[in-house]
Image (cartoon, rainbow, N blue to C red; front, side, top):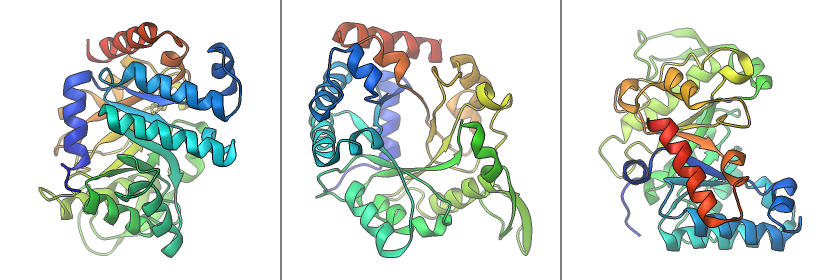
Length: 302
């Protein structure tokens, strides 16, 4: 199936509906607040209700895969039907599965979430790079081939991440940041992830995989007291920004950390902040959910 590259479709969705991504996080407390049971049936009603309410009102939906897996096969079936509803309604999805492995196992994860004929196919998938960004090649390549996208963890908003993501490591080559080429140099791990994604995107610029490799860069001020500190100017892909709302990040923090999408330079973007509970607590009333999205989008763009 031929489709426009994921980043192109995401840009169109952001232009039409605003930058907000809503996480579909069926936590037991939210299920209870919606009058639903903490079981696969409750998760399905909750998730499909979010899609019904927000399709045509939000750029991107992000189901949290672990909260479906906890209910076994029935939970994954609920996720499959939720993703199918979103496809039918024309709303983009990113499966927040944070997959990362090597070889045939990574290829299996890629096919499960990014292949055209996969029951759980989403428009994009979150990935963990900590077996090496190169180990993600099966997913990066399949995203290019199918017009889908990936978001690779670089700087996350949880305070525990700094011990890994802020560590210094030796890297080879110039990387996407434009640093002097040749030899080896010290680079913060999170920046080395961004540089590797920038190199991937540069190799596919203006082709079917244009901008397919995005990054996860969280709102860290609420948890660490400082912004992400990364050079994103050469990424040339979208940026998924968790940490808005319940994790302490504010729309003002988004503006401080990222500025306007075109302020990042090099075509990087769109920047898509994520909120879940701040929106979902307005449910189950469909109008209230839409109003919550409208208010948060207004705060992000106003």
